[in-house]
Image: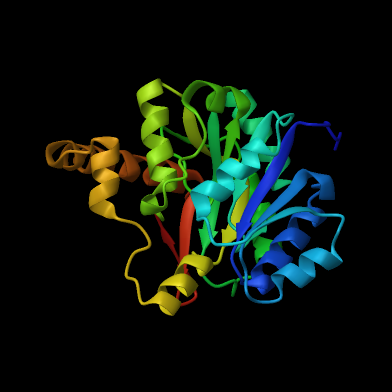
Amino acid sequence: MVHISDRFVVVIPVFNQLHFTSQCVESLLRQHVETDEILIIDNASSDETPLWLAQHSELRHLRNRENLGCGCAWAQGVVLSPDAEWIVLLNNDVLSGPEAIHNLLDAAEREKLGVVSPALLEGPNDYDFEDFAPKFQKNMSGMIRRGRFHGVCFAIHRSVTEKIGFPDTDRRLGGYEDAEFFFRCRRAGIPVGIVGDSVFHHFGSITQKAIKQKTGQKSLGDLKYFRSRVGSKWWSRKRDKFVSRFIFRKWISDERAGTGCSLHMIRRDGAWELH
């Protein structure tokens, strides 16, 4: 693997949950991501995260004095990485598959995508991800779902932020920042997609669940406000839901036909659900 200087930076917003952060970083390093290609934005963690970051000075990091939210952390990552061609925005509750970041960007460039996400295996890691991921990736390589990306991991080409701006920092969007960015991409005609050349295991919105449990909030964002921000009307949502149902069924059918898998699988009770 040839290291391309300034090709990318991986931006990881964190709020507590040090166990997940540390194993996420370790998995990236095992897959040939360099320490100077990782930027951790600490949103005022109150656990041992600040101490851990201080002990790992080889990792670039920024600590916010208060929790500014995911969107602000993403935007900070873009601002602090002016020379990176790609900004990879990544949850901390994930494990990297084989060469996941490099393969993700290679696929994006091959498919001429401005924003790209990897395949996801979600839920408990009760299936030996390290053994399963290489086989899954080999089978799914070359497959693509055009017109979608997801907030667990999405890489943005520099040209995209120059065209439509940074991820939104509005705190009222909490949890909908990726969806707001998707709406802007769609309106600007930015090609986006999910590719099978790269895969991550996602434990499942660990930070959001922890914040909800601590605060008692059912949702971190204001759904009505989000819809008004992006101009999402009732009739357009019904239309999109109707169309998406058929699109996703076709994706799953096509992907399953040759492999028995899909680009999004959820682990429940020791078995896989295709999504």
